[in-house]
Length: 238
Image (cartoon, rainbow, N blue to C red; front, side):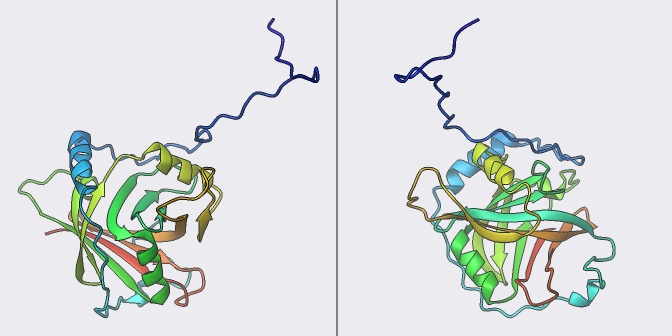
């Protein structure tokens, strides 16, 4: 049996902490949607990251029929899921969709909007994001498995959204927030000052409504009725 190392005082020396991310204990999703186009995702993502960030000006007024929400916050035919917006304030925002905060993401999207800008717009009022892609003949790909989307914010074109596999950093964020069902804040960094700004997040419950094989909608559910931030995300093939 190997003896533990000792320091200069003769006391057992504790092992050095690992600089890597904490172990991930998130559970697999029960409705996993594996992608068949990982190589395409990686190739387009490398090109997408070279595009300049487009700061949208969301001035077009929009309204949604909030009467679809029942008194308990549920929408008829909807499924309750967890959605998290996160990223460094000056870098592109990421959207992660999970069955619950303790599950692995079933969808991660990188959007062409700075994190700080999107969260600022949400603090000012209703934000509607539409993700559009082209419908192909005999389409068999599930809509959330589409690799590339044209993105609109409150009716104004705002660049692109790209689906990608969760990175080690994404999973570290999800692990850190595994006990958070809803809320917003800043995740402290062990590396000190970050040139892209603080790593911020906003997590909420969403109602997922499947309209057809070519359309899905995610409505944010606010715990205080209509007084909190409003966000709806539409996925549609046209």
